[in-house]
Image (tube, rainbow, N blue to C red; front, side, top):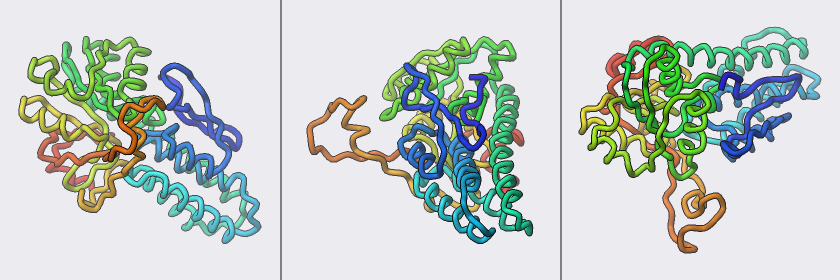
Length: 339
């Protein structure tokens, strides 16, 4: 995965349709804010850092194709686009962060020439994307220092290049360790119900030639009990003052890791940090029942059964050994220094 997952091309955004992987590589060409919102809702675009870049590019598309005659009209259109994107997925903070970055940038500009404002929005979106790649590489560099030759690393969901603009967070750590010549192996959970681990993480690792073994989510305890893993690295969709919010199943893994004395690390850029809020203030996204009752469109449960389908869970910081970001490696108690 050396190519970028998302990029701006002459008024269009090109990105991988992640619902088609691993069997097809389909490139989406998105030309409007509404198309971007739909791609995010349907998880054709997913992964917290990538959602940040996608949100930024949604505003860039709105600005680039706008017919506004005044700065005020353009700003109103951008606010409307921002609201549309904010409503797509409520948990991953990068999406909101990127929107705020761009809106704040242009609100402070005194320039009234519309072409210059449009150019600024596009440049800012590209900067957010560029910064994500650089942050991920630094995360990989710092995180690789925690990985030893011979380690077997368990990871959950997909926090690789596909979940970011490029390189990856949790998989960035693994990738960097591998590039340093460390002989490591990876155990990837399938990650029900959307199977991001089975479809995406194994796909990325196999492309890199990194040894990977796929397990079902309910094998995690067995793997730890048999001492088949000695490090855990996951990503995050939001890091608040008292917890890590990540893909459903992360909390279970963290509790088991603590019981089995296995280091549990979280890798995420500072754009994922939301340290002014606590876990009680975070909205956990509830997704459609058919993600649980069906597999690839085929029903597997009785019709009408009640379903609980939260996309994320909450892992208290007491279960986290360290958080790896582009500024270094931090103990949870030291996060306040990043606020």
